[in-house]
Length: 197
Image 1: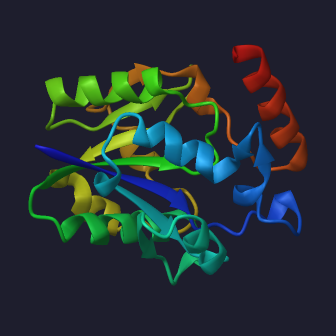
Image 2: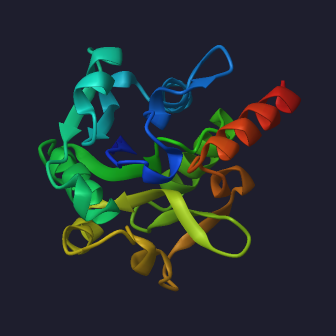
């Protein structure tokens, strides 16, 4: 059973301002590099794909050896990136599940993703997702059997409707609740990462 990871990095980040938040400095690196490094700690790089859209060329330049899919419809919202990720994963017949996470979920760590993958290996036919306490979300593992449903999604809600299903297996993951939308969020991420070291 092969798992492929899709790091969704196509959005316009309008609340962040003019700068590309994914290239914003974070610790001794930058936002997207931290996410790629975290996923690379649990999966081989050949099983990781960036889903790009807004300012794709700048991101490809930073990750020339990492596979990527180009979401030409990125302005539509998150659902278009999920559809792009599924299209990319469908090209591999051995890929049985898709791990989806946001490029700006910088507090995720190796333990978070390892636990999620471990639960998926035990229950490979179920959707496995993070439980933030009050809601469910990504990172999430979607088995091939639900990819047609992901392909039907529209707008900026992503897979939330699928994750609300009672058939979903949840994994407690407080770190997943945090993502970077504004410069203040970036500062909070920096502070929280410093206290974790």
